[in-house]
Length: 577
Image (cartoon, rainbow, N blue to C red; front, side, top):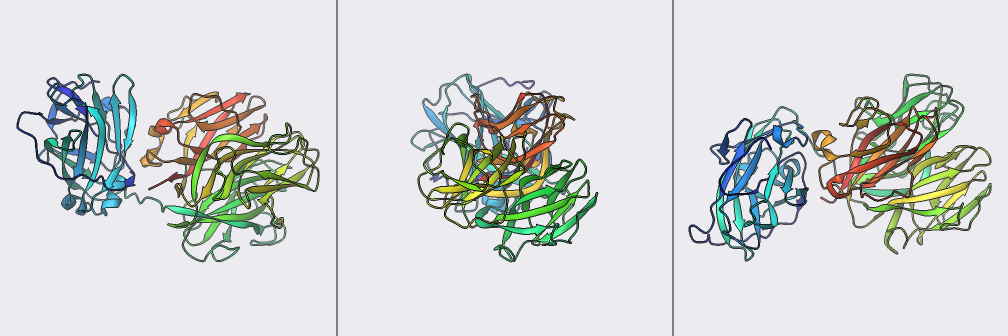
């Protein structure tokens, strides 16, 4: 560290950034302050240079709206809580509280402020680590957070923090206190603190917590027939709008996002397709890549505001097909639980089903519950990465609920000589899902998670590019991907907030040097045994993937085989607050 203090043992400091968790009240009950001299608290903050100043309402720490300082702790404000040595033995608790009166002046509800101010604590012990802490809304309207299990007599503990910003349109001073409690709950010391919540006119409204409602796959648009769009291919640099709300089983209101399987076919040029929210600016991302002479399908989760979605193509002519898979609605519906990626089906080896290709015009039934981290009951839908490989002819694969009529929709298109992958979200009936193949092909299914009555809500956002190895975007080394760790401090504006349960990415490989496969998974220091997509030179391929959070929310991306450039767009995240 550049900044140094002298005196008592350096112990605790708390960090603030965008977004936070809202949990149950802490259950803190007032206790008498212990006798004078049992503990000396010295909460001080460093703002750069060499001077430390008291962390008090008279000298508040500034939280800059809209900033994104990353993790360079030496270059941003930080605070410490110092005590005298050996005044308390055993695990103790430090509680940071912001009082109800100043919270009320922030312009946000207590829960809203808790969602915007985020604690990111760096514990500098023998095993340094980040700890992400939730604020909790108290009955009186204050918000509080606690760090429990700290040994305040340890003469080497140094917990510091950095500020990543708290977007707001105005400046408000928040006041509160830091308290130290022993194992019995007795308060041994209290010191006043102040935080200047400084706005820059960059209001950040968290997305709506949404639950999933599966639907039987239904074709909503087909430019080859005029269904849902004009009866003609889209030309280059053009778009078409599809009405979704109030049709295809989707309610007319209350919908936050729609899950579509989008197919581009009869393509004449290389290019890309972007599916985005009607009435919003077109984001600088791609949903799928176009390849001449082939059909490419990809699942897309598109946020909706007025019930419509826009389909833009950079190249043409191209025909577009869109099948509705389900939708998200605010505060209701099924919630998501991520799993460690596991292979549930591989017809090449007889994994999950009989060994041998699914023959043309046939269906294979896969038992999904009770396997790969999926519970034996209570599952409404399952999220799979589905791959068709060793196809004998051009065809398509449809994933659907077991025992239900096969829908006139496709999940992916199979091509001889190419392994084609696509994410599918499939309703589960009696623990099973079905796969129909119009052409003979091997099929592989890797589980990413499932929906049920419990778990994490989905938070749809405007798709945001967070990594691009071609330019070095995302604090990555510019150049071809071999192994890459995507860390939370590379993500702007606090999205997703630390502590999210899973992340929804659209990943793309481009400029490949040879054949290989891409694996995107939680960073666990273990070998990844599944793949996200397979690639060949000259083919720009993309796929949607949901990745459960690992410790410190680090995601790993590995290219096995030929080197490739790698792009990751964040489409949303899952959290349980």
